Image (tube, rainbow, N blue to C red; front, side, top):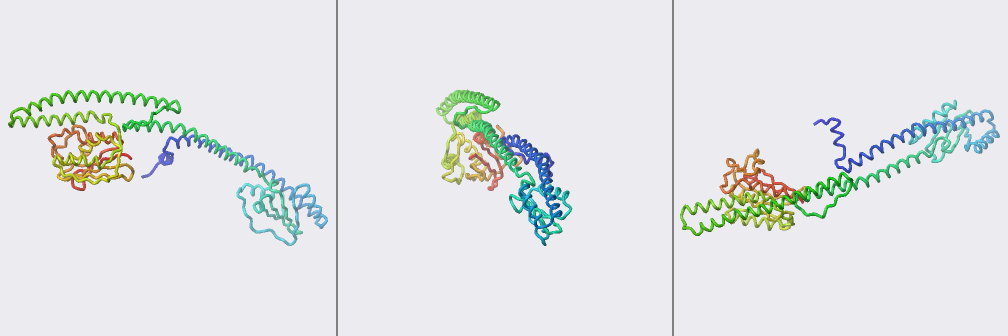
Length: 443
């Protein structure tokens, strides 16, 4: 797949708010510092170096001319003394010597370029120089009829040696500004992260430490809005729980009276049929109330999965199912025990109804968390109808044998419970030939 330029640069951008905020602040500062440094070196520093190099080249040209005027030993001695006293130059004549053939280039090319230009303009004789051999000096050699004239000049006579101080100040200023930006941005991002953690914990039903809004005004407004929403949702949950408790009591009272009357009636085929209808009605009411109740305000706890799965398997075995389990004794998950047990029981009983053999495997996920696999050897469900199976009150009669007691809420309840814990329930083809239900739970 070919990426366009905007898409390519978008992929290079930081993915976190902290990284993007830091980039927004640091990038303009870095660009400004680079631009200022460039202007400084290109305009001011190079200009100063050129003038210094021209001055040194003029002194070298004067020394060469003075040597030509009086090449005697006395004249050379006088020239050396005057150059050292007045110009801080060390001059030595080396008869019979020739100019070196090679030269090491300076790390800063503009230094050599400025000195090369200045010497070329002032000298007609061949010359050679080196700005790297001595840390504090520049070595200049000129070929004259008397021999090679070697001139050692202080480094600050050729170019400005304090340019690195400017660079150091720029680097220190950039680091200081970046550090301040990191501290301020981190403090603001931490407020957003705490808000996200509080929202995630509330969504999973975990009662974490008291959340107090802080940070920038916009973040505090969002936090106050979240707390208000949390209070409204909690009030709604409490009201729904109270309503469902009342409905459950009101429905079970007449059902209990009917069951008692049928138990006292003379046994015959009609009474047995009525008992079956009554049992089916009671099961349907339980399913409806469980779906409407949802999580019901049950607290999240650390639960050993082996014990919970064994209890589910025992219940399925009493109903006539053949269930085998494979669970590590030390495997623990954060769940709502009763709600999760009911959700897992729905999956196991659904598998038992449609298959002869059911296996339950619980294991750690490679990406963290826990997954529970429920497999059966039944007829399965077509792949294209996996998501349809999770719709409430949906019964895939043509795909799997119809469960006469079911109302199409088992899978919907299981997924609702798992998602309430931050996980999910998915369907796939089972190695046994039937359906595999996978319950994923976060770590």
